[in-house]
Length: 432
Ligand SMILES: [Fe+2]
Ligand SMILES: [Fe+2]
Ligand SMILES: [Fe+2]
Ligand SMILES: [Fe+2]
Image (cartoon, rainbow, N blue to C red; front, side, top):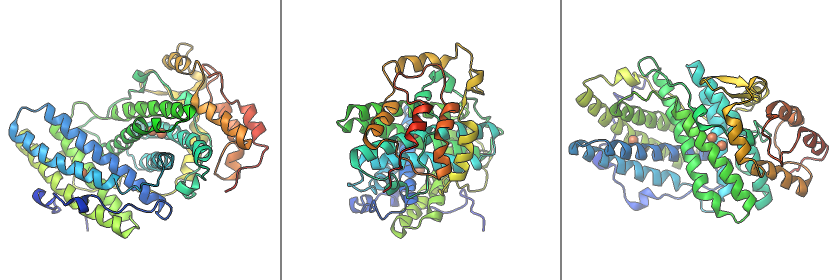
């Protein structure tokens, strides 16, 4: 049976107002929950925040009161959904625990999207960003151990590797070269539109989480690590959102937003193993079908066009979570030295011009050291090497990966060198 979201029935908007007890549910148990239930919960929080934020932006550009009333009604529901989803997270899940969950979302979601992306250039951009979040996961895993004494697999459950990626100190770009080529709204597949908006929502949520929580630790090196990675997430939002055609009308964008919510809840519902949380996804899918019908009616009314032209007649699955170790290792080994070209293209470290725009930024922010490098210095003083979790073969490759993945120019003074990685590799891995 095919599921055509424009034809499926939802729940009427006036039935979407719920009681506080229904809005705020019992959280999951942080040690018993499946790690991919947690990643779904993290992602859907980001999807709802974007759905809410977009309707505010749109309302601010509209002087039609009838239209603003519709946006206000739907937006309130998005906000209540956001509360329900975000507050499924338990009080005893620390900020660092949650942070590892966020980076697990980024790695495994981006890998899934890249493999299900019809546009080659968009796929290349996803793969590029993937290796950066992969490195963030590695850096934060050191801190979770140093501050809380915990195994990264308490959160990751062995589904996502923890080893060095493209070093974070090399993620700091001139933000204008993060701007990539946009798809063409007339020819892009609806799947491309959904994939990108899903990832933008996730990255934006990650940025906001670090911006709002990184200061809540007392350790200055950890605070600076959050600041450094938070800034990279800003670059990720910039990069992924630039893939979206800016000439889409505001009604078209509204339609794509609701469609993206429908697809993501559909996917969550289909995959969910936790029965209580599955009910949430099911109910919210029915909410979103109604939001989609409202957006489709507005599109027809104001633009006199058929919504199918924009979103097609099928559903997509933009957030299937499963272990992506093999895929990520392959990208890691082949693309660690990839860099952003200045003509919205991609290049390699060896081809970078001496006046590459990002060198200036990297030299400035890293002048007094890179917190993400200091992170490795600190863990080494404590347990003689870094915290890692991966196949032994991959762990052994860290020095050679770094040799290829680290720019010779613009290195922070506290950079941990490939030779130092070789030395620390002789010490035993911390076993939990
Ligand atoms: Fe929503
Ligand atoms: Fe990240
Ligand atoms: Fe990111
Ligand atoms: Fe919605």
